[in-house]
Image (tube, rainbow, N blue to C red; front, side):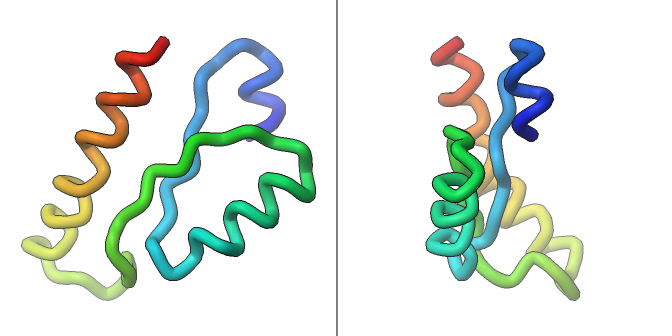
Length: 69
């Protein structure tokens, strides 16, 4: 991610709400300023309906990120 950002490409980290604290610590540790796109935990072992729900949570956040370019 850091290399992608250094090349001028916008990047974001998609993570479930259970891992937000760890993601923030990792970003700080590696001096990376990544916006977080947060979805409900878990993201594995889901039905298609539940995957669609997570995508529905992520999409508005992604669109706001893209609009801020």
